[in-house]
Structures are given as C-alpha cells and as structure tokens.
Length: 255
Image 1 (cartoon, rainbow, N blue to C red):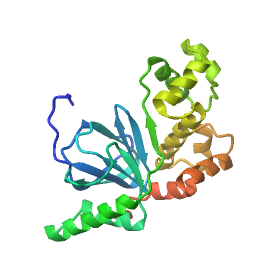
Image 2: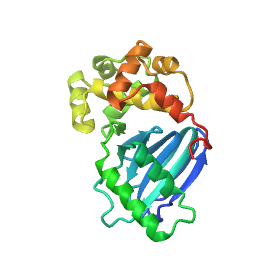
Image 3: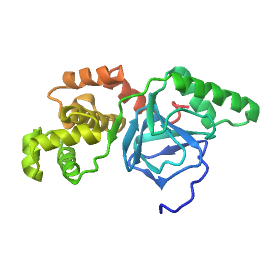
C-alpha cells in the first residue's frame, strides 16, 4: 500500500486465516487490539515485528503502518478503540491475555446484537484489564545499520548454525567490537539476548503450525528439548506444549 494512502477505520471483527496467509501493509485511524484464539498472529512494521500465540494479544496504535502474517489455522479477533484516551502504548506492544481478557476480546470482536451502550461498557472493562496486563518480550526490533542487517540475516537463515560475533564480523567486514556496539545501540540487546528472542519468535511460529516440541527445539537451535522448554517457560510462564495445544485449536473450539 502506498505511503500516501489514507488510514482506514480499524475493523472490529473475527475472521479465519489459513497458515501462511497475510494482510498487506496498511494503517488505521483507530487503535487496534488483535488476538489469535487459535494459531498465531504476527505484526510487522518498519521498526520490528511482534508475535502473539493464542494466549497473547498485540496492541497497534492508531496511524502505525503494519502488516499481519499468520501461522497455523488462525482465528483472528480485532477490536477497534477510538484514539481519544484509549491506551498508553505508543508502539505495537504484546500483552498477556488472562482468561477474562480473552473472553472480553472474543465478545467485543463479534458483538452480534449487543446494544451499543452495553458494548461500550464491555470495551471499557477490556481496556481497564489491558492496562493491568504485563507487557511480553515477544518482539524483534529491526536493524538499521547495513552491517547489522547483514549479520542478523545470516543468523536468521539457519538457527541451527551457531555464529559467534567474531565469525559474523569476518563475514560482513566488521569487527566483533563494532557488532557488539551495534546490537546494544540499535536493538537494545546483547547478541545472545537477540538470538534467544529470534529463536523464541521462530518457535512460536512453528508451534502454531503444529510441529512437535522436540522438532521445534531442534530447528530453532536448542541443544535439547529440555533446554528449549526451560527458556520458553522462563520467558512466557508456561511450557511450549501448552502453547502448541492452544495454537492448534480448531476455529470452532475457539469460539
């Protein structure tokens, strides 16, 4: 979509998307909350990407150019919020969705015959709950420096290959010290922290597509399934097996 295109109203809707499908680059005049009750949804912008399995949601501020990518059969819920006083997040943000938040999102995304005043009250409760929801570390900032972009691309090609900063530097023509500085300055992470985030991001995608935990661990570069499970539980608060079961619910069971 051209950058000159006018923003459109954000839809309040629920739709089913096949794994591997996407929604092209666009922006809205409203804030938008997106949630996948099955599968996984990813939001991509020029500054990075955010992913949400079936127990997370993504807040997208009004006016932000973004596109959506879907992993596994995905039931995709969208709730629009008027820009005035509707949230404190100025960049896309992944938020935890406890049971109450999930039910509120599902209700607001398919309001059926609810009277408008009642729907407004439910949306306000949802917004209040979202303000209390912890932010989640499920984002990958985009590199701007060409050297850092090339280094990141090399790692992303095959997560089973263990690249050291020194080896990456030799491949792209930058010193280890330069790459260390660029990771901290541009991505606000060390190289090992970024690589863990990248592997976790990829793991969420593969789990939503129904791959076994052991296969996901191997493809994402963990030495063992137990090592993967430990990292996943530490960051997301539960095992990847639970995410895989949630992400592979059929659309009917996610209603």
